[in-house]
Length: 334
Image (tube, rainbow, N blue to C red; front, side, top):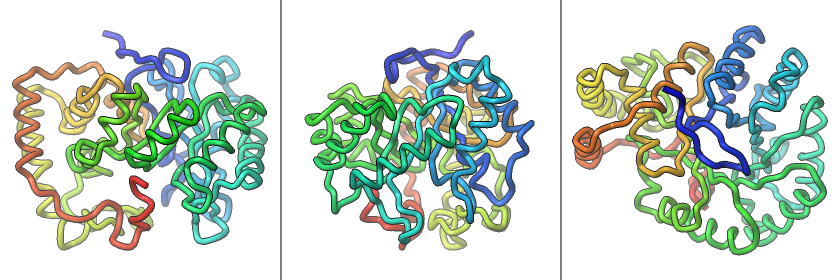
């Protein structure tokens, strides 16, 4: 069975996206051979929407993710045009990571992105957070200008609220909205984001569909999270909340066992079935794990299974805020 597809950014892509962040923005860099194999597998299996970021790298050089993609395209010229590439930006990493979307900053950034990519341009540019100083009207105006200059073809927005999505779409075409969505984080069902995207037919790239790592890592305590991994600072993974939140994993595992799939695959399948326009966006450094995620995109949960999972989620009180208590909460769903 092939991976189901969805119309996205002017073409058909598999209904599982491929997150590249952890290949470079992690305590340990993924070797090129392993990263290239992961990307090749994703393309061959149909998960052809690749999600990157201009700041997806460790200091002092945050552009290592883009450099990796460039090396992949050089090593595999036959594959360089076989995937849709979205790149996040709009964050001033030299100024306390402030969202910045004035035209001069964005123009310099998109030029830098394509210069580093070298062998191809990005297809889509995504504003990672909303710059309140510029406002969504100004942001969209700037993005449309840069699109018309030929730096990219499509516009994406991340961590935006329903009102912002509607306003942006009234100004120009928005091809994607990236937000967190999983059994652990269902905010978009209640804050209007999912409804707005459905109404406007804007695909959603659902990042962290595995609960930022609760599912799929076999972590038993916070101490199992590798040193240097930023998830060690997340509130949901704190000593106060970890053991409680793991109970949700155990409940999902019971359903997964009956279906003979992993809890991670169950979660990805569930996320993807909440709306045909949702592309679950898992990330990994392991080619075999990517294959498992893609297989999850082929799973069709029954109505009874969906009801069981919904009942578990609705009756479970996940403890802890998204990210950490000081992680710029004002920038989430802005």
